[in-house]
Image (cartoon, rainbow, N blue to C red; front, side):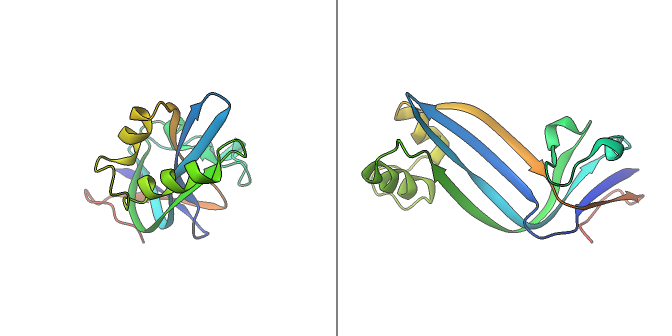
Length: 139
């Protein structure tokens, strides 16, 4: 049996990576329009769950992102990253740089950025369903 945790609002599942270098920071990742989190362990966080703060998916025992739809890549910079460097990092992140062919995470590391965290979150109002099918799907 599976448990499916479904956000009731679009854009409520995010995957976020944080990179730092000196006094600079990059926050980037994916925002999923629709999706769900699956676990084989009955969720017990409901009583303390705050929809405004959400929960890190890694903090849900057995939790992993299930089906997702319509992901949008997003990237943000601290004010200490110059506009010129932002432009180059944006091209790398979206895979349009002609200088680099590797995945953006690897290029950021090659450029001296340190990955501080890589986490996924679900937030907003949620619904938890028991799924008896061996292949749970988003509904």
